[in-house]
Amino acid sequence: MKAKVDSAMRALDVGVKAVVVASGHNLSVVRDVFSSKSTGTIFMDRPPTPTAAETAVSCASSSAAQAEAARSEARKLQTLTSEERSAVMQAVAQALRDNAAEIMHANALDLAAVKTNKVEAALVQRLKMTEAKIETLAAGIEQLAAMDEPIGKVLGRTELADGLNLTKVTVPIGVLLVVFESRPDSLPQIASLSLRSGNGLLLKGGREAEHSNAALHRIVVDAVHTASGGRVGRGIIGLVTSRNEVTELLQLDSLIDLVIPRGGKGLVHHVKQNTRIPVLSHADGICHLYIDSEADGAKAISIAVDSKTDYPAACNATETILLHEATMDSCAESVLRALRQASVKLKAGPRAIELGLLTAADAADSMAIEYGDLTCLVEVVSDMDAAITHIHEHGSSHTECIVTENPDTAEYFQQRVDAACVFHNASTRFADGFRFGLGAEVGISTGRIHARGPVGVDGEHEHEH
Image 1 (cartoon, rainbow, N blue to C red):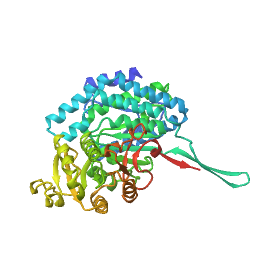
Image 2: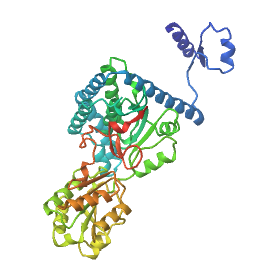
Image 3: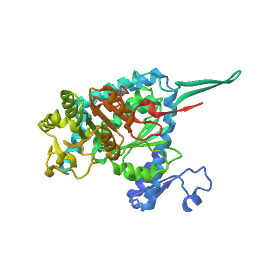
Image 4: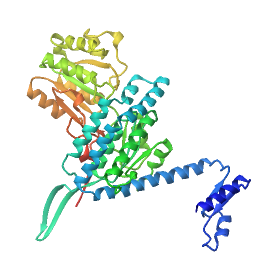
């Protein structure tokens, strides 16, 4: 074959416009070439620029190939024993540690690019990788690897008749498409969940994190291929790099089983409007902290500051603090003072202005804003029912919390509030797969079908009988 390629290249060097190398065993090969059938390999000095239609066809073909590869490799992954898949994940965790310098270098390129473009601070915070983040990722993957086997878990058995038994067991969903924005640390989290659950995976990260995502993807798939002894190929996790490919993938309802968009409302809406594939998502993280009349002041301060300032860009950060009007005579001022000391900018709701807690100059533009930074809305409510009504009118069904020392009040709040996570005397930041003991999360679902809240391994399974 080398001789044929060399001959074709020499022909181009002396001015031949194009050379086709094809098999002579096909007696009609010349006719096939001149009738434009796909035959052999063409060598051209200056290949023509493909038309938009040709590019679209090529993109669709590539997207389908990635999806088919993910499904094929997922079936191979499922043939590994639980111990073998755990060992693969342990290898992925160690590979992240071993290649931390490469990850940090790639991330530095992305950070330099976004700083040049003067993007908002919240995006930069989500984009930034640190050695501590890498270690947390590795520890989370090891936690996943140590979990009980999720595939084939018996959910129920029924004896339908003498000698006729029906068993319900867990199985992987199949192939997942996860689209995420600006958080490269999401990639190894999502990948590890798919490896543990036995699913194939296609990933599309934000363009602003392209260097970080490329490095993380290579590290993960190389570790999988090596640790599995080549039994699972690198196609188990595909990395999509262009928006055109995402558009094509959203049409592949015969090859992709679930789409999970992790990002803002615009991304989620676009995905839902452009696919027939089931979508698991949340659109906003408008989380509320309600401080009851019977709240402990010190707890209220601690929880409010942590909920808002621990990681303001996260979707589980508190965006609105609701104060029972009775707290005006107790802890309200102390809570706001502590938030200001933590550099939080306070925006005011109508009653907070009316009661003089904040001024008209602090008025919020809306009661339903996910700030994603050190800004927080403060509003005063007459009682707990008013707080619940406010949450249902302006919240996003993500995470809500009550601070109170009255267990009956807390129980009433937790029963009445409709959200994926409802906490008592705990920071909204606890709405997290790692903190839930899931090892990692593929996302947080605010829907009501299939999975809700932080979605870990269990959320990536269905059942069969």
